Image 1 (spheres, rainbow, N blue to C red):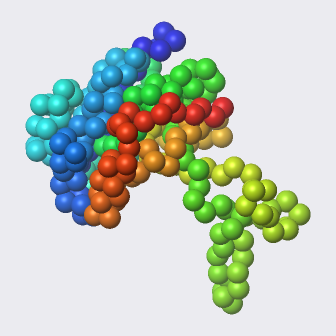
Image 2: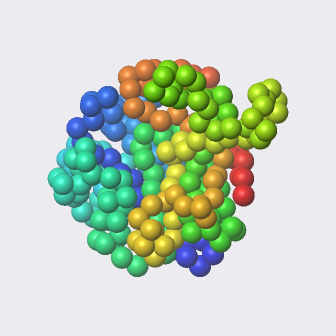
Length: 241
């Protein structure tokens, strides 16, 4: 609970991954991938209940043995490629009513730690915003990205002030979603059906904890990062209002 509000943490993990088969329970440094998220959430100061939404028996068994509650099995219709994450979250909220804040944690962000989770919830409470999502610094700045028009000519996606080229050190900060943390006030989320809005605040995470597992190359990158980190907890996160 935070600021008098109850918090439901939801881990979403379906079977049938195409990029990395069985990735959610793939052993990483002695733990199944999903266990990294379970452990981080269970150590939170604010999470009142941690549950899994999954259609896959193997994932469910691993989650249960790892200390995550599985009060229901996700319907197959919500485990298809066409199903959206927000549909899965709303389904869980309908099955588990009575919570003020929902926290979506995807197991494909294993380096997100407890301090990140609690930091995002702190920011949500302190800002009085309806939602908070985690972000990382953009690798390619929007001012330096282009599209090609019908004639093959370069057109900027975003124009700098005055339309002038900028040096890297002159660029304003740019952020990308990293997929690690999505938090929102339940009543607002039911109405908006999205974590993103003009009122959503961003919780900044460093690049080394923002890895999102989607391909075999991501698995190798994760293993490489783990070899370099002094610990799995990482430094304290930075908060941006």
